[in-house]
Image (cartoon, rainbow, N blue to C red; front, side, top):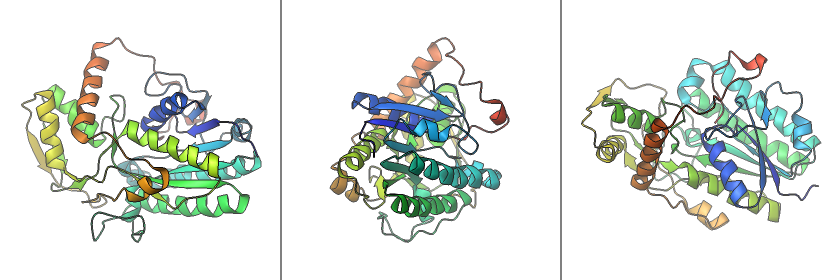
Length: 329
């Protein structure tokens, strides 16, 4: 099997993928991206523009790499609820295609980007990786199926793998406007009301650069040891109430915007924060960025982006994907 430090990042144009490309380059890896978009969030060119579910060149792309970071997904719970068939097609069928192609291309390892949504509404906090998986929405159910598929297929084909469960990743001004932290920042800077669905939620927020650094640490582990660790959380272990998050954003932006509470959504998890011990124990890795510092940097990035001329469009997409939503993590 290949020993080079070349990696393909599916969904490499999205929030985590953009940060991961930068982190891999800093660590001496050669990382290339596959995405629907022509540019990542930082405006860098995506090497392979295509749809994971139909891309005919997938095996050829993988022939040059020793490992894969699989982030391509319908990445928002609300999108998965609106388009469950599309979510299943991308997140499960796309994963199956990728696993087959990676095995045929002789890849040594694969990292699967999973989510806290696999636990559903936990009955005790902080959540550990051994907690029963009881997802309450379609996105979470498909992620559980994806985790199992990755474990089964990687074992069958001799690929080491790592399942990383992410939690409320934030940190780029060009991420989805409707993602929680981005929505709060964007509306605070505009003086518009910050909207909370339901109220009372508590989450574990992770800065994208920490998430990317953890991915690189997992890649180094798999590349060196060729051993599959158990699924691991990538998170801080620090709970933050959603109204506290709103107050932080208002304070850092010096905004007088109000906070309004609207009706909750039945498919949303209400509370989650996780234990980071397994990540520390296995990879000797700890998330370094506290929430206030991460928000301050993200808000600074927002202001700088607003002051700059328009950057290159992330379009065009390939013709067969032109009517699809932005769906890569």
